[in-house]
Length: 309
Image 1 (cartoon, one colour):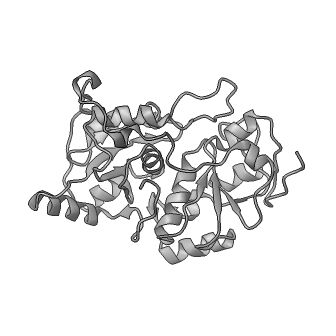
Image 2 (cartoon, one colour):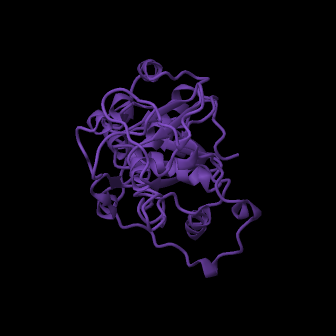
């Protein structure tokens, strides 16, 4: 089922992916579908970068058009609202990807786009989604082959058979937190983690938001503390950093960031180092949506406390 943790964690190294592709091709197994979410914070989707070099056979997946959807006019869904699962499934069908196909998501190497794809695809009902650790940068560094060319055109959905029952599931396979829930304060024993840079968390830098700060009660855990150049740090180091934020394998976790993208990297790291543990719950609007809703903010290095509603 989508969202169920795997025994080995969701990350694959470049060597592991290359072996899997070769082995399944030789033995007529289910060859993984490769999706390249080439995207940079501040720069947007990068189809030109994909066309210049990508893993052979990969499809380009636009984070802005496919992995984000329209949100509330007042901005309370954040800068990158989660798309409706039905829209994601339509895109998958147009690329002849079925719910049971194994999928490996990657990006240029920063990791944010791939992690967002990992979360959104599973939310849309995709059952087996992994992530290439380090993305194209790691694949290239391993000396593995590359391909050039633009993204493949999707098949018109009118030319496809009716969607299977698996693609007609109720939307939203993964749990998520809402602003009203968080406004009431985090439940006892639950850790709230903020993936943004520490200076934005403290309120010293604004980034794309008009003011800085963080959700009261959330602790700072920047993505850079868990990854180095888009590659997950040593598992013991990641577990230690999570422990510093009050998280072990049994801790309920809510993750947030600026707009619901890098928070997925924290969830991904958690699932890699705590395979089988309950998955962190995403607050999709994150700081941008929280701010648009006029909710209380905290500043400084300490989490602070949510004031009474």
